[in-house]
Amino acid sequence: MKTLFLVIISAIQIQLVISGVANVYCGDKNCYDILGISSSATPEEIRVAFRKQSKEFHPDRNLHKGIDTHAQYQLITKAYEVLKDENVRQSYDSYLANPSKGEYYHYYNYYKAVYAPQTNPFVVIICTLLFLSFFQYLARNNAYETAIRSVQKTDKFKQDVNNLHREQPERKKEEIKQELLQRIVIQGGQSKIKIQEILIIRVTLLPYFICKYLYKKIRWVVRYNIQKKEYTREDQEILTMQLLKIKDYRWEGLNEEDKEELLEKKLWIKENYAQYVKEQTEAYEKRKEEFLNSNKGKKYLRYMKGGK
Image (cartoon, rainbow, N blue to C red; front, top):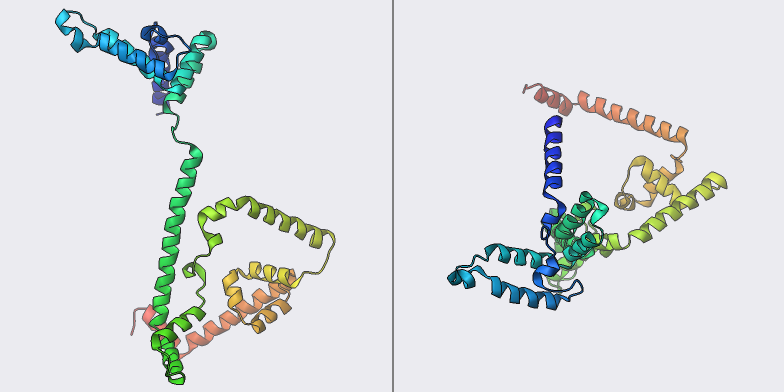
């Protein structure tokens, strides 16, 4: 396979050398001379010269004269194609000014000019980010609406609405529903999207986030690694969440007593964390054993074994 690839590449290279870079332009003729213009001609002068030459040498106009101008017309068309495009024209001017620079150098300039994107890459990136941000917003908003509808179907929500309606009979149930929904906080992937979470905003603010991240890292090293200070309450929470792999929204959902209990364990100290993991493992094994020894656990084991 590798040999075949090398053979193909070699064949292409040989063909390029044989054909000559001039053939991608106007062959051994000068594109400006073909149209009868100078190398400093403006785009409008190029268009005028092309229209004049194409009318004069169009094959259909000369057919009745018995003159074959097909080849000349093709040459005129080729010259116009080279000179009408500013990028291709620049590569051609470079070829005329530096013919000795080498075949591959001029081939590169030509194909770069021909196949280079015509649209500003910055505009493409912005449009792509806007497109993705729009669908991100739709997806998150749809997930949030789905979660809200699911909450409204729960018995607890319906009971809360009825209880509040009995306490305040003058209010409509729909009004009470909307009030209760305003109090609901949905976390995670179904939460209501915030402006700073939208993709294009995050990309725009990326330099700020990078600087903020570096500042926190430097501050952490200076404060705790060099100065050996005690961790602040906020940093204790960060360390605890990192060790226990708890997301921000889950941590915020804990009551203050549970938070204090975890912080008092000082899990950022290796020995304390190892002891905590050991205790959790032992507690899990104990619960597992109790479950398997219970009637429900025995039924579960029989079910897993295919019994009844």
